[in-house]
Picture 1 (cartoon, rainbow, N blue to C red):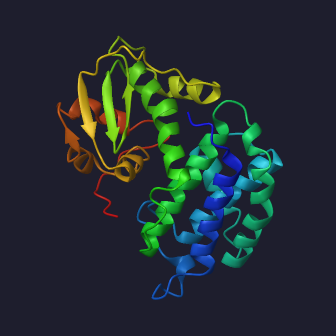
Picture 2 (cartoon, rainbow, N blue to C red):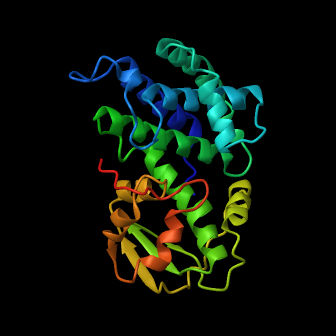
Length: 261
């Protein structure tokens, strides 16, 4: 994993999100807060803001019971349903900098997980508002490294998949070992996130297959923002079907329909 400090990446990303909503681009609907977010079915932009703001507040306030579960997320949105978008953004401006002062001291990979979640939701909002940008930001690059090291590789190992080379631009990673797994990827992922250094396969492993994709597309695919059909259209030199479970691991799920962005 990169040694990049998390605090400035977190705050830069949060600032971009706030600016997107507070100062929408020319031609964007005046009702930005009520815009539906295709990447998050059932949510509007204001609901995404409520979620990421709720994360700031829950972590700062020590409300971590059931963290990262659907119920935890739903409570963040529901408890803020009565707030205006301006109030939500004001809460973000208050709690966000407080979290930034703590994030580099989180144990294991939890700090990276928080930044990764924020990077994902920035792009969700951008997609909803038709304002692409920051696709090669430090947050997106960090998120991709986090996902592959702490989610995809341990999940592939637990599922007995690989070794598979993932290639995006000038970067490449090998995930899985091909050895028999225990069939419990969620437990392996949780352990990898809690560990200071997620386990990686030996450098001597020879990949038995390769998939090549644009960095942004790979990032979105690994966070449940692409369908199986879209992933099959990546550049594979092996049958992609056995590897689709790598894009359908906790806490993400494959989309049932394509999400063009």
